[in-house]
Length: 200
Image 1: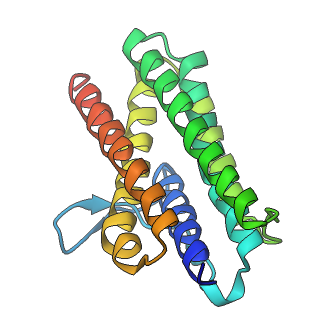
Image 2 (image 1 turned 90 degrees about the vertical axis):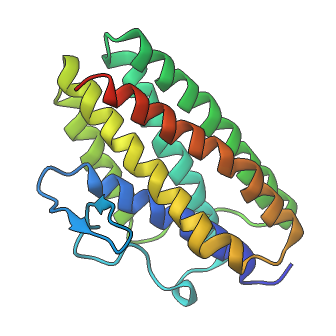
């Protein structure tokens, strides 16, 4: 396996989560992309360090954390929401991201990479802030904020996969993993969008 391929996969996924978690911050200001979609900006710090500054072990840890964080937000929906549809969606997201995380862990083990969290855990800090914001909400306000967060999270990952990741991948194993996971992200996003639209 070429040394840059696994870092590319995990860095893009981790960056996507950081962008998505930043989107849930109430002080973030929206921006208009060329595509016309409105997205929230990441924190002032870069979304992720350049690949040259991260080794495989650190990026594997970021990938693992990215899935763990959405498992945690999904679990929060299961515990806090009183809406049966939101609860069911949270359960689905927990199950799906648990499977994806395990696939990443299995691939890391196969490649002999031991995950090492980054010294500067901006990704973790953003997730803590997002969780704190969601924990402060209740009822319909929580449901809407959680769905908004999940829509942005999954869209960020889809965009990263389609525009950056798949075109750059040349390792068959890694590409197969990404292609197998991508449809689930689309399904999650579309499901969250539909449920969110029903709450207007």
